[in-house]
Amino acid sequence: MQSSPHILIVDDHREIRELVSRALATEGFRISVAADGRAMRKIMADARINLIILDLMLPGEDGLSLCRALRAESSIPIIMLTAKGDEIDRVVGLELGADDYIAKPFGSRELIARIRAVLRRTRNDGTADKPQRAKRYSFDRWQLDTGARELLRGDGVTVPLSTGEFDLLMALIERPQRVLSRDQLLDLARGRAAGSFDRSIDTQVSRLRKKLEEDPNEPKIIKTVWGGGYMFAPEVTPE
Image (tube, rainbow, N blue to C red; front, side, top):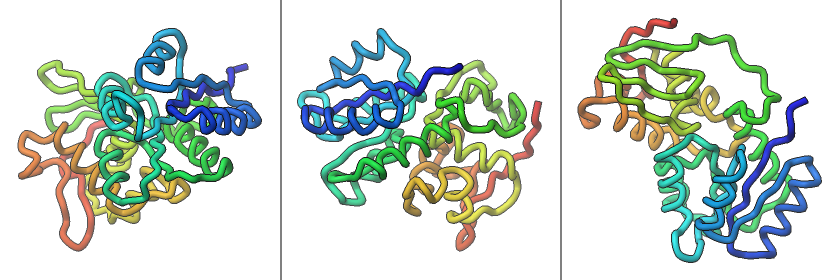
């Protein structure tokens, strides 16, 4: 029997750490807590973490810097906590690779629902049914390894993907040469339950283009269809 998901809460407020820990423990999650980036890294070096709840405002290295560093080396799911409700904070967090965000103050039920939604998308809780899909997809000069959730370039370079990037790329790559609206991509890649907003798709597309395209300003793989949405242009070969 697989153990329950291990959640790491990174927040400098002791009351919030304790409140969230109690709520998640009641739902059967395993919990670790850290007050800053240094403590976070120490815990991650000693334990396998399934998801990180990361506060935006931290002493020293802030949440956005930690999110950027985490995403550069892994695809571990990240939910950002922020006391700010501005759209710009949400956009920046998603641009840096966060999988979801939640603004303080929040209810424990909402947080738990978001955690479960992200874990289902990442398949890290072992409960979601995995779709029948190929192990690799080849297109243009790339291969997508669905097991490792990595892009493999023709010259041997490996490019890691965040959960959001992987889900969006899968939505596109499984429907090549079809125009998909933002609403369709939200449903296919992130799901309405996650509370996503339309600009998140544009943000994820921009991030994918920076990794896939030779010139992100003149995209040839993920094309914009004005008034329609996006289209994955190259032919795709499943393996």
